[in-house]
Image 1 (cartoon, helix red, strand yellow):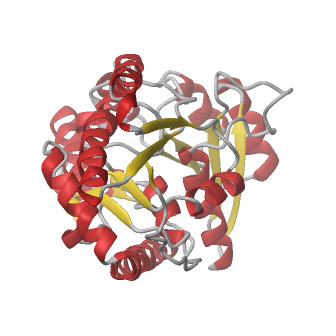
Image 2: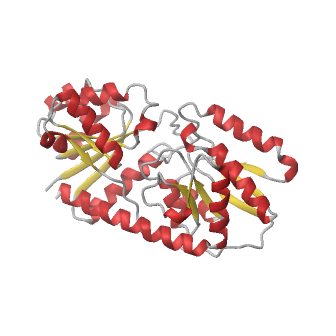
Image 3: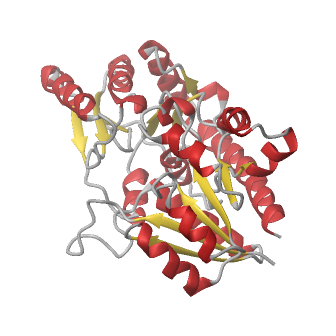
Length: 349
């Protein structure tokens, strides 16, 4: 039987005075924790640890004695595995990627590191999206002259899981404001600004004022111009009564409470492999307009991330049929995550 250990890196902005021992609650941590709990519930021994840096890994492996160590995202320098593989020759190491290639292009060392990782025989690349799986296999097969069978063994599909715990919510059309939740770290590919245009057009078709909710505590991957333009947009149109509401980053329990206060969620981004924020909104009974990039999306409520008019149209459709949106998205998310549980359990059992 496999013994799995997930290891994440603690965020650089961790502060013991304001944050819990895991650092800030992030999508990466939540994703790994969902997997950890799911494996345990399916009879696989699993643990999760948060490391300060590379030098913690050996101690954590000695503590848990795993058969498989899953390193979440790209943070361990490849040369570290020259040491770790000798210290723990029976451990299978899995570097799990959480991004599609357009997003990965913003990680300056990604291609070099993936190529270097593939030189270690006990190291596997785990990928959570089918397109990225194909591209990573193609890249590393060219780099290493692998056969198809070798590529299939060394680059594996490890999709995201999400707990199937859903709430219902009554949709209130009598409010003066309509609250739109466009949460997540501010990055260019998250497309906040165009979504704000679509939300404004939608609200004005209803004759309502709009509150556009973000949590801009995390500005990542050259996201500062994006938040600056978002702030500038709402300042310039303030006379129309529309507002930008910025929330601080919070632990997941508090974030779910915030999600539940929204009327509609927006996640019309350019690149996604899963979209935990969208799943959080749907789990609270809040209807969602996403993009076709979300793998569990419902096509009827998916908007074009380059077209604010289409975003407004999908918001209007959601406003008219909120419960249809919620039920359809919850059903689709359940189908996706049920398959995930089977894939992971089969691999580790």
